[in-house]
Image (cartoon, rainbow, N blue to C red; front, side, top):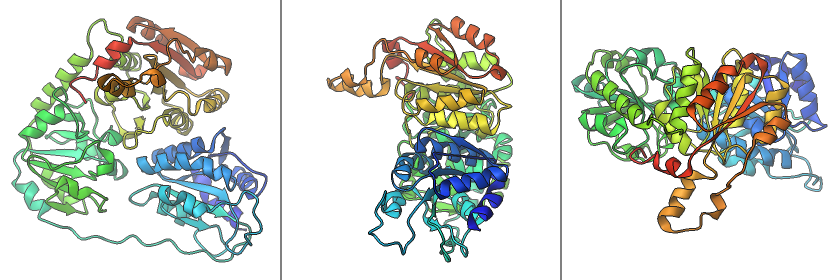
Length: 509
């Protein structure tokens, strides 16, 4: 039976997420659990997709998010979009009508292929003769990773095979450009994480940046780790200073989707990437190499800029860690001090994210999760829960703002039910700080982004989190010292001055 075969092949994923129906989705969940896969019931299918994609990124195997046909899959589309933006591999499994079922059968009917076309790599029916989990997961995981839709439509005999990815040829003299360069810098995209290139990046003796989505590709505590490259960095961040000294930019899967602005560099640039991403020509790359090995051998022979990089990142940290100011930088510093052996940091989207990207020193990619590409507000809580489920041996810290706390709040019940080692740090300035900046600058209404006096502490307290509040670094330090991750989830509300919150990003982005 295809459902049993699917469940057996997916056994290595260990976790699946979703909102089941009473049809084949429920039968699949039963089969998964019989094969050792834990199914986690969530409250919104969009969260299920984000959780499955997060487990897929961390485990290297596409996990499953399960929904009913029609409205269930429609709910999941938003989470699939987040996975598309962040290159998270997952299988969206939905009940469906088969291709030969009459349109007169209309209950919850929807054109599911059209609905998901923009946020998936494609779709297939589960069939007796057709791709199973291994083929579908390989499709989701293949460059560039993302969601694949698998439809459960009863007895289907045949389904199309998975399309083969084209092999692309090198262009330009990439190796020659690297060999001749005296001051190359590296900008690593998420492709570097998927190719497990961190050990090689960690021993380089040249400046190494990452995109925000690839944060942790190089250990950010090392002196040559230059931090995050966004394309819009201002005077205080290292990207402007260091790139102005370089004579060659070497991208590793550097793609327009992972930066905030695309444009030619002041010097030459080449890229190491097996795909031609849309808009890549905006970087004006002089060449594309499809394999990294030969290029890395040449880059390992280069040496320059380590002292300059260490000085540039130190200046930025000194600027952000202003004495007496209780702002996100101080909160991230308190976490680093409380957990010297490291945590999995999950950063939602907002001005605190801008600060966190630049000041939080990620030791490796799987210990830093965010929406670095899509800036998808609300992704943080599902990501944090999934990260803690996948690997509960590492404490998980979620930094989230006033906008991101609400969209998937109900999923916090899963963290409480599983007693996860998760701390939610709500950094609140009483509104949507980054949107408010535009309103202030242009004299537009600020009312829609202000929530003065709003608090989420009672809500988290009501579902069983340990809760607390702090409005200074000492208070947060005490909260973190008292928290034992093995005792279950914590929520801490961190009140921050709204005007200082606005000012903290000046000169950075």
